[in-house]
Length: 70
Image 1 (cartoon, rainbow, N blue to C red):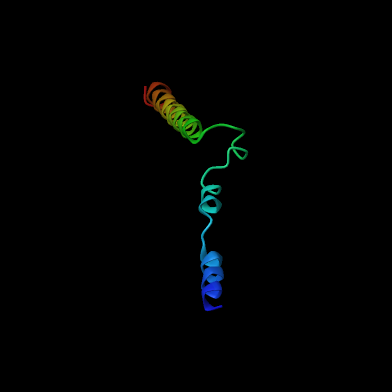
Image 2: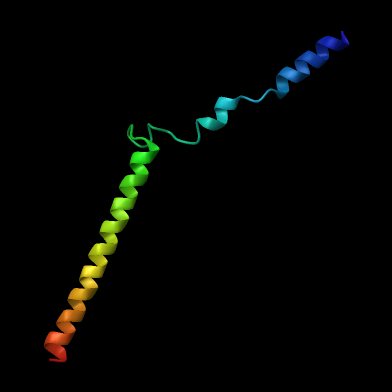
């Protein structure tokens, strides 16, 4: 009888390894894209944003030098 109790206690402590894995990456949340694709898209988007901001700053400096100081 004591042996049956220890067996049931062990089964209650068993961890479901797939429970934690499903939270790592949900393809439904990202419309079927892989994690690599999403990260690559974020890198391209960040680079594009930096180029646009730098272009606007350079355009502003060019206009400042040309029309205000020139």
